[in-house]
Image (cartoon, rainbow, N blue to C red; front, side, top):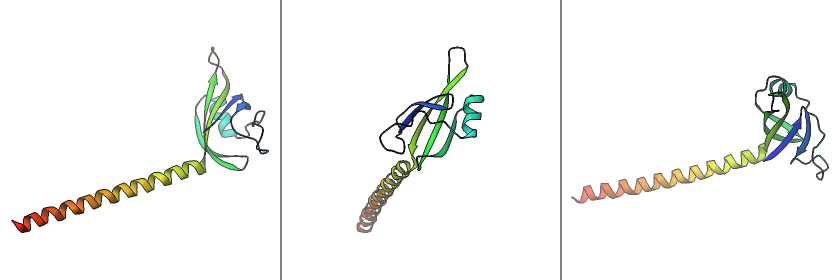
Length: 120
């Protein structure tokens, strides 16, 4: 998970690396009107898909306000889409395996009950 802090529409601190893979994306400006209009003007949170340095992310943006309630920037929390899809895939595999074990246990139980009824 990556976090970026913005002064209005410019990143002032970020955990996301720039395209050189060494430096942070500090100084980068947001060029997405949906984000600037909703977060910086309307003060509402936005969650969307976006590309950063060619990597697709799911990102949520939240307004930052000063003590007087004026919007002075925003914070974003981002996660690589690849990581999210891999996690979802792993969970699907675990659910499938768990379901198979439950079905197997039920088959054994039904077999045992039928066998007992046949012997009686």
